[in-house]
Length: 106
Ligand SMILES: [Zn+2]
Image 1 (cartoon, rainbow, N blue to C red):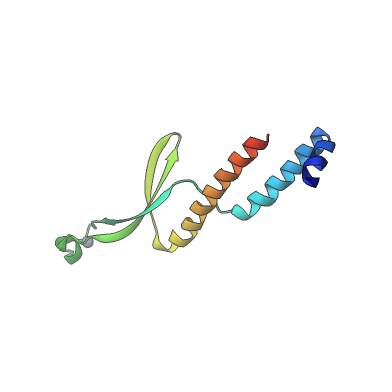
Image 2 (cartoon, rainbow, N blue to C red):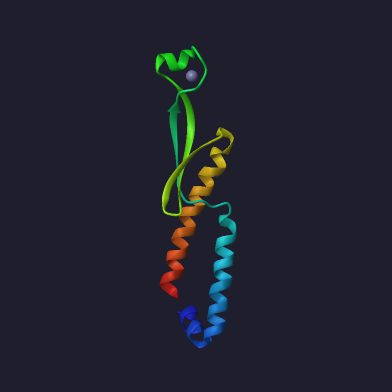
């Protein structure tokens, strides 16, 4: 109740400044952030006489999908990056939800 009445008493620029500060406080911890998806896939290699490929097992790899200029793109990413990418994807979803939330208040 206090917050609501306080908000109404503020002028427009002070309210806008308050929103900006709230936005910055909430967005800053969400770095790194990306939008896309990560999938574990199995791909064949280029080695000749590879036992794993011959058995049909192939090799595990991580595929990152994202959209660039409206087009779906994919790229293989090193295993070492998987943990940070998972966090970045999680942050990206939080950031998106936050933007929707701020949209409602504008
Ligand atoms: Zn192979």
